[in-house]
Every structure is written in C-alpha cells, then in structure tokens.
Length: 234
Image 1 (tube, helix red, strand yellow):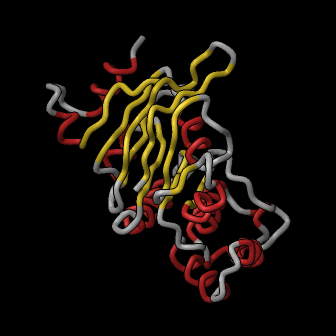
Image 2: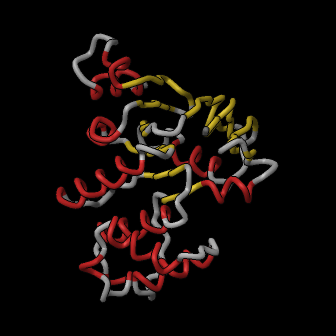
C-alpha cells in the first residue's frame, strides 16, 4: 500500500503542500489532479525520496521514506514530468543500462519485454536523442517499469503524445494498474476519466476532493470538468 500521512512541504513561509493525506491500494489507478502549481510534482518527488517533507510521513509497501529510502526506491517506478534520458544511447542500450542498475538477472529478456510492451520496436535503430516526444515518453515508461515495481508514480505521463500514441500508452498504464499501485498526475480531465477509477484533486497544496469518479459526479455536476473548475477556482 501507498500511505501519505499529513504531508506538508514549506519553502520559506510558502506552503507547497499543506497536510495532505491519502492511501492507495494495489489495483487502483489514482489520478492526482490539479492546476499547474497545485503541488502535484512536489508530492511525487516526496513519495519517490527526491526531496524530504517538512512534516508528515509516507510509507511505500510498508517502508518509510524517512527511514528506508533505498527500500522505497526499489518498490517504485518513477516517470518524472521532465523525462531524463541519456540521449546519446540507443533504446536497448539505455534499457540494459537501467536493468543493470537494478541488478536484474534476466535483464536481456526484461528489456525485450519492455520494448514490446511500450511499442518501441519501430524505433530501435535510433538514438534516444532522435526520437519524437511521444517515443521518449515510451522509453521513460519502459525504464520506470523494467524492474517490475509494485508502485508506479507517473508525472504527466501522456504529455506530448499524438492521439494514436495516447491510446497505446493509456492501455499500457491500465494493464499495469490491474496489479500495481498507479498514481499519475495530470491537469487534463479526459486523462482521469480514461484511465482512473479515483481522483484526488489538490489546489494550493491542499486536498479539496478525494473519491471515485462516481462519487465525485454525485456532487450535482454533469462531469468532472465542472467539478474541477469549481473546486480549484480562487
């Protein structure tokens, strides 16, 4: 389970996050929804041990980010908003490098599986630097999943994808979400409705809604777009 307990992040006197709490179980795909600057990426960086919280605690698969960060990182696959890749490497070379970091015994087989799963086969002859934005996102998703983590943290995973790529990546994420914990951030309502069973809406660092899509729609609005604009307006 992923447990976020009373997380606060301060930069000086500014609250990037203010007492955020929620939990996610295996088999759930949860959309972390909010406008730009709401605190989504900050929360994901805390969960993945890139930055510490000012207050609160996160546990990933019963491991504390404060006391057992290495164990947490072994449980997580992370695709940041700005996908960091070695652009001078070819796709298989980069994925083998990633597999070696995790010391995978079946690294060659796992690389082949990730290439097939994320639809990278047509671009194998190119260096990563020559790939389109959409294919770079596929490489980032492949490296996040290569060690078969129990938790996937995906920050804006569908940014820059064309409609065909978008549909394919959604399928990959939905398939992974059948057995894993998936937390993905977006400010696009259609992404939540296409992939997620639950949405957590944050604004100005605070949780303003948390529930299944059906529960949120019971608020009397016709669709999530209206709910989002109501809850995140100043």
